[in-house]
Length: 336
Image (cartoon, rainbow, N blue to C red; front, side, top):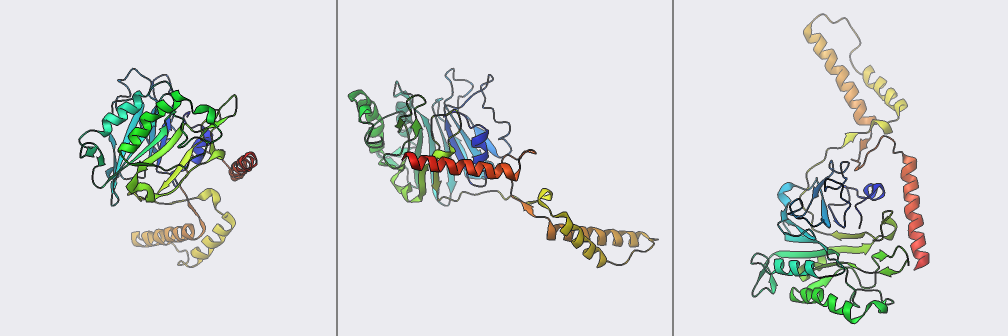
């Protein structure tokens, strides 16, 4: 999946999402994601050896900056194709792995398997997850199997493809992982043939299944010039967030009502008089300041922090974007 463009960034609302896992990101000549407009709301995470590994990084993560830094940390994995983040809280520990497995080999899956077999990842001959800890694997696995692939894609169930998928299926069996994204949901539309396939997936340990309130593909949110569809998962974990203080939204203020209320509040203060002492001055200043403050509280709406606030963005553009999403959903329903 290409790195999110402006279309996706408008939908990556930090008031709604806590984590974004991206595969095959766009990287600029200095080997970084073009995400300067993201850093106000998101921490951008790269694989552990991102700058040292000669191979191109194929995974990055965006973590909502509202999440408390005490609630998560990166897990060290020496691979450009696998990275992980661990969340801690009342729910225990949850590790989320962002995976990109290339089409022509299973090297990434072997790295993932060796990592899972480490002492801090498994117990009892590498068959049980550490107590109180749950795992999520998600990403582009580039494997085709009837367990998840669309039933109409029987041409993909060749001996070679099934054998390649066997490595992934064996790992799922070892750790008793469950497929969360239902079978038969397409995650990719081929650019040329428009054929729908399922290379992307979401798996988790058994104890975490009930925490998923939803896991589905949002076809209408696919960014331009990409062939993958975004997978949206809602997981009921409630990690610790930092508090955000709403700010006055002066652009949405009705200034006619504001002036009327200000006049009323000023009339309630002592009448103007000549100020001859410091005490009188301070009292008059306090009365004026209080009148203005009260008016702002009464008549200026509070702003919801915008993830990508731009001077040129208007309510009309917001309505047009919603219409585009609606048309996208209608088109998908007609094609179904």
